[in-house]
Length: 493
Image 1 (cartoon, helix red, strand yellow):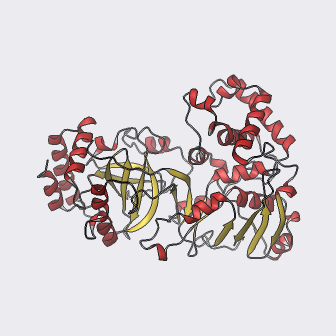
Image 2 (cartoon, rainbow, N blue to C red):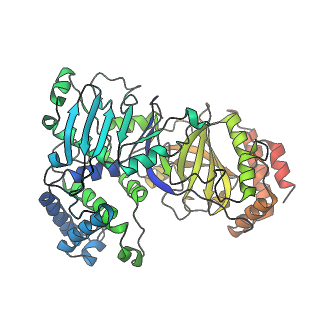
Image 3 (cartoon, helix red, strand yellow):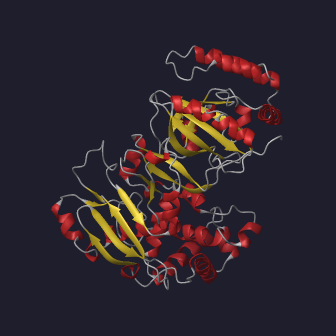
């Protein structure tokens, strides 16, 4: 290709609460499963590992059956401890009791705070502070839990890294709300308070004052419908698999040699988001109401002025004298974070997401190919299906089985898709980014990639014409493209 095209790398993958006026809380199940593990007595954890090992050994069809083939029972626990030592400088990832993990825990009606240091021999204590952590029986479904977690602070490196990243939810950085990550330390504190309120100063008194109140756990790593401190068999399996993924598969050369996917936190979160019993009902309600969406927290902003991206691509994005793609977007949309496209598939990519007041989303897809635009608009009667398997949902509504297809092979085809960010069925159209002047070198690369994926120039032109005619008939007014822009691009083919 003529140019080298940038793509985003994920640092975290979680649910971002949008209706919080103070900040953007980021919650994901991996932090709550790890936080649960940090509070577990070492002997209990070892028994869990042994129990899970036996079940995996007896189930040849289980995705994690390879553990029983490649590790001994004791070797599995030892590998987890070695991985913890590599990551944290401590083999003993679990201290002797929750009280040693969470120190000086204190509660007021508004604030929950403590010193949290989950890793034994780790001298530095991690101060955690959570504002508005209590749910009540009287809360309004329209507001709660958007008024929860109004501020989260933690001294962990993970929290600081996320907080310092531009949130991609505002045009001007000076006006933006910051990401406030519920990290594993904060999740451990919430788990501790929810299950051992007697060990948190003043918490029992605070909860007595408000009938039906409790500590909010967005994801519950205990037995379904229970806060019992011993998970059921399914919970045990999830906990042990997560520890294995985090401490072994993310670092081990053995895993890479076996051809298995390295399991960083975003990959772990993808898997855990498919476990239905982990979700609290309030978390489901947040997504279903549109008050929260699944988003990616990036490693770096790829289109910054000081980035190493080719200047031709920057000119298309920013415009030579203003304008460009960002100028178009600023006139019609507001930023809405980074999201996965074709999540979990070979052609998975991360896209910048924007939205307008009519419920339409505009996505710029960045992959190892020239950027594309994906525009989505509501499908009548679609409701969020957060707890359904994506493929089951797609089959239920007879969606085209094209999730594995390369985005360039789907140019200018209007389809219904299951959108990962909103968890809704939506109409979608992938297009060339013709809202800004496309450099000739980029356009040539676009045509070459399209041809590589079975779309000739002649067929591309025909699709563009059919696409505009179809959308022009859309009485709702969504997605009507600028036909002059289409003709301009066609004339350069």
